[in-house]
Image 1 (tube, rainbow, N blue to C red):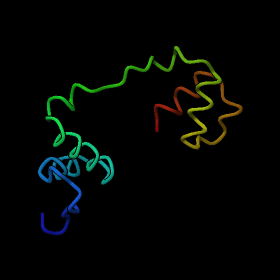
Image 2 (image 1 turned 180 degrees about the horizontal axis):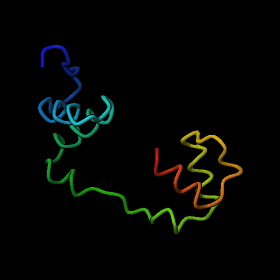
Image 3 (image 1 turned 120 degrees about the vertical axis):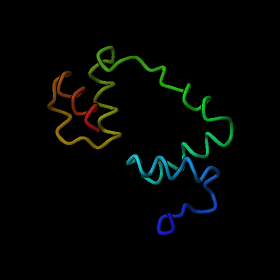
Image 4 (image 1 turned 135 degrees about the horizontal axis):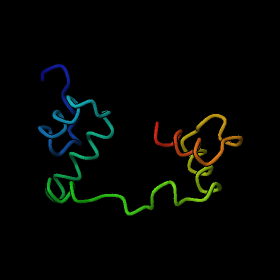
Length: 89
């Protein structure tokens, strides 16, 4: 697409454009496109979180993560509310 060309730092412009068309942010699309170019697209797809589900986190850990994401009202939220707020981000 002529109006939306990635910068020279994007290593896989085709994948970048596909991700942008799917609604990914510029930063996320560039990060994924560059990771795919560094290894392979299938290897990037296999990468994934090894973190436990939010239900297994402590309330203190959930609040710390909410603070990182600047979730308003986190200090008065219960565990279920924190999980919902984090998943909505």
